[in-house]
Amino acid sequence: MKLFILGSGTCVPYERRGSSGYALKLSKSTLLLDCGNGTTWKLGKVGINYLEVDHIFLSHFHPDHTADLIPFLFATKYPQAPKREKPLYIWAAKGFKKFFSALQKAYNGWIVPESLNLKETKEGIFKFDGFTLTARKTPHIESSLAYRIESSGKSLVYSGDTDYSEPLIELAKDTDALIIECSVPDELKVKGHLTPTEVVKIANESRAKKIIISHLYPICDKTDITSVIREHTEADVILAEDLLEVEI
Ligand SMILES: [Zn+2]
Ligand SMILES: [Zn+2]
Image (cartoon, rainbow, N blue to C red; front, side, top):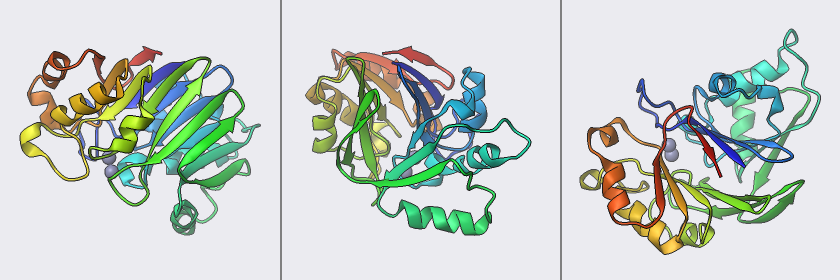
């Protein structure tokens, strides 16, 4: 599988890092993990046509993870744009249909292409054509889920936004790659987000082979958090950057 980091930042406007979005190319399908602002046009920058995306999995409903659903769906519906031939599935936690119906009300029918299928998911294991998805709840907000995707003998886990979590460690057991949020340095710890020390703990307890540190507030770039994390774990440590491609 091939991972493309579209947005390694947060809600804070920052020239180096856009809001959360990750594209994953599998043997039979293309997935989007989150759709924060800027995700749609950055798909093009990494060479993925937005019409290629089969499934969007949302980690939770915060705007920095969902705001680009609007341009993505408007483009998909736009009559002068190339027509989408295959179905599009958007998956998120319970409450998503209600969340989407509010968006739909605000934007009339402009963001509801014919191909759209909305799905609410809960914790569990789900089989798709060519991949398996496991979802676990995380401590951040009510709708927060972390995902594990397995395909062609490889696995990738995406933490979404989260605090320290045993279920996340279980989900990430021996995974080939773990995209893990690391919002702020240790001294600025806030509830519902991780710091470098907690990232190290999760990396070591899960024995993830590679960790990709992401969801970085600008303050994270003021210190060398990568070296701090690298010093304390055997995992291969990658600092996420927008438009970075990672072979898994
Ligand atoms: Zn966030
Ligand atoms: Zn959040």
